Length: 184
Image (cartoon, rainbow, N blue to C red; front, side, top):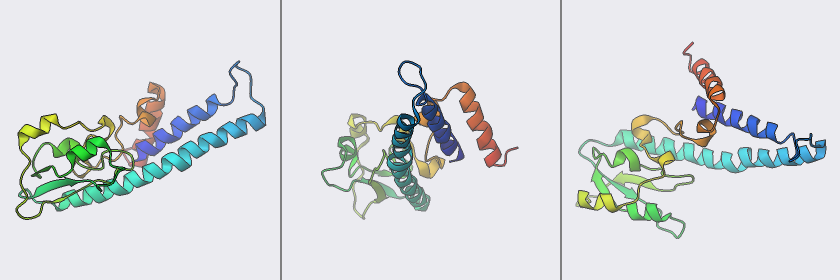
């Protein structure tokens, strides 16, 4: 998770530096810069931070749950079932497969920002979803295509915070991450 925080900070610093100049390349007056900078702050540190927090909590809960499954368990994808459920998540609702099925490598929740889906052990007598149905189901957003219970990865390096950085900035983030992880 160190890389995500470092990449976010670097990304925000780059965006902030772009706010110093106006459209004609002239330095903005302090009041205008401050207004723009505070809007950027709200975007990164209020709106997005809330979604990141919720994603980290949901990912931790789902990773913990994954570790409790046995190889013999049937796992069922479940949505909240209300009108806020995304169409692709609704399509996955009630899909029930063995915990060893490769579908769980890409479809295990959370499958998006503020995803409220879960996966549980299927009730006794639950029927397995036929493999023939799976190709017709939508694929998850690539950013959320994974299984945090298997990989331990909440925020992949495909996230725009990291992916959109220059090679030099990525090297700085990677170096910081190594230091934080005690790799040096």
